[in-house]
Image (cartoon, rainbow, N blue to C red; front, side, top):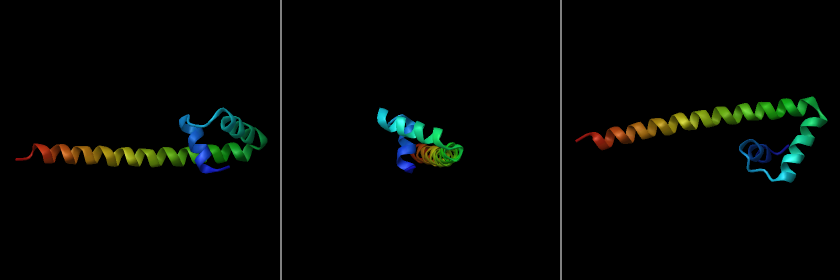
Length: 68
């Protein structure tokens, strides 16, 4: 399954037809469900890292704007 389609599925941007495609794919083979869950885990970890980096950047910017 295409990772981009899975990502759209995870964040609710998949069309109704794409959602059906993913759900049918999951139902065809238990390995597909494991692949979906593994990709979701990878995406969640990437998002967590980005969130941390963004938070650190905001803090750095905040400190820079406060300094004389």
